[in-house]
Image 1 (cartoon, helix red, strand yellow):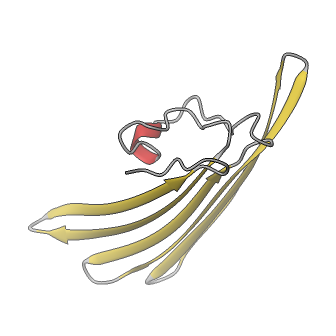
Image 2 (spheres, rainbow, N blue to C red; image 1 turned 120 degrees about the horizontal axis):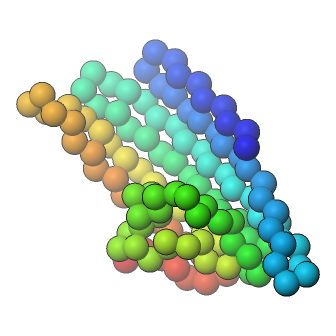
Image 3 (tube, helix red, strand yellow; image 1 turned 90 degrees about the vertical axis):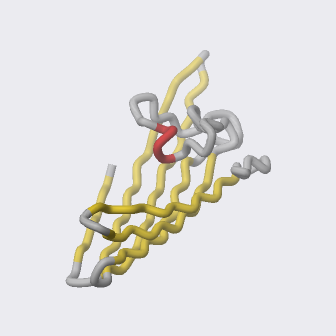
Length: 121
């Protein structure tokens, strides 16, 4: 896995890339993971836009994350606890702020499968 994170005074970005190979039943499958995110911080508010792709090997194998807490990231009513064989792409926008000594987060994710309409509704 390759990860790059840059934080400047009021803005940040991150890039993550990983390659996965799996063997099953005499077949070898390859899949790629890609995550891109960028955002800006203001006084009491942060805005973030992100893209994540869990690739597939021609619809035969989806990038696996068996130790991840997927309902936190790809959950959306726990539809994607396993990456579909067709792969999964996601875009999310989030706002984070501080109010009355606490922190609030508003997150909007949108998912789609590479070869099927696996949108989160």
